[in-house]
Length: 296
Image (cartoon, rainbow, N blue to C red; front, side, top):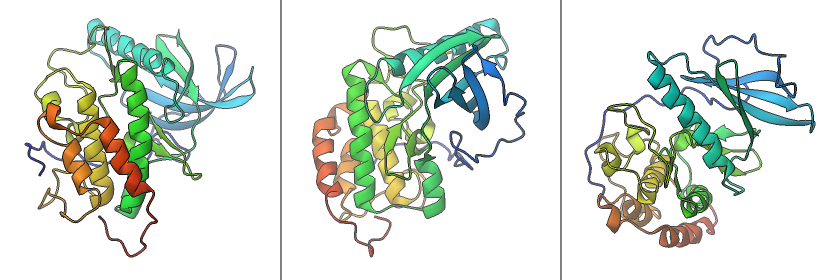
């Protein structure tokens, strides 16, 4: 049984922020056609967030499409806050660049220009799991289990190098039309051995998917990523986050119930291990999808 105090629900994202056709919310497109660092030609604004934008660009040297993340730091009211946000974004690039896994977006380059940080990475033309759930409501358990296997494998690779993602959620899982799945956005990741980059009173992550110990301000460990994965799998089969709706519990007979409940145990020491969770998810993922299957 999932037992924790739920924060107030946040609104679901209205659209993808890293794919073609995403709503720009009034963001200027004046950057289209610019050549950055005499190499990267900005072609299309793919999305935006509170700290910048993501562009589809062409690497003029290697003649391939890339995604370029433009990180803007002018929103911070103090120089200290701007520096922390810059350092955190640079750490995102560094932590992602040290990871080599097919389900983690590869970082190619990073540099500072005009007071902004530019991160060049693999272009992945997919939709976020969050957007897919907005369209479909929920997914079959077998498909959710497959997503879980891929994301868990990516997290295991990150954890083996001392990197904790800290923000696993449907919006940070991208799925291509080919079925390929990747985990994105290591922007709030914690790297073992490095200084924590936070502002006073700041909690990093997304509350709906944060482990209880994270909400209490404790340092995130790999077990916190496992909790967040459990919350993500829950939303994928139920159609809403675990603390939203009249009943947060899963039907006892649902195939993913033992896994989700095991990943979301309040005590981090009592949660399913990544190895055991991976085995259980893989077993369900191998089953053929039942078209008559409901949300769970």
